Length: 219
Image 1 (cartoon, helix red, strand yellow):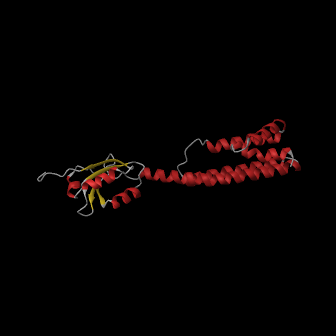
Image 2 (tube, rainbow, N blue to C red):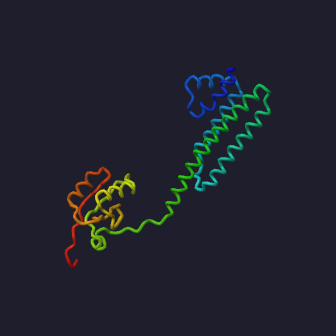
Image 3 (cartoon, rainbow, N blue to C red):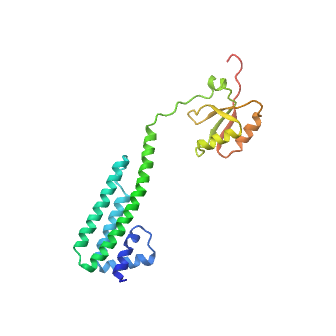
């Protein structure tokens, strides 16, 4: 394989930063004397920059994918047009390089589609009404038999919290309030409150564990 073809084939890897030092030196040295490789290197760098530094955040997943596919189609058209203007030897290199670039952009579609989907879910969640908070010192928490107040860490998932409470035979009867605290009540009588408190406090996912004082009659 000629130096021209080796340099041409390595341009995408230089642009995306995955090329070795030897590959990068080969491309940069060859591009200084080869107008075709120099133009292609600059074009791919511009395309890479456009893909990684979007001017606006896409909030419509479908529109985002249409926009990305349009960019890919345009890149394919540009490569085909440029290839037609070269002689046969350079035409082969241009076609192969364009195919490599389009393959890379197709992979980018998948990655960006995942990112757009996650963004869409996040935006939808922002429009969901906030849950109604309950004040854990209100009579309703006491009337439901609440004995423990906990504030789990933000990193603890709902499933982890449920599993932890099930192991201690506890259930949520109120909350979360504005600071993320829950009121817990025992599922059955006979469990030691002190042991439940000690077990919960030993969990790394708990920021606060404290007993709820029983109300005096008539209050």
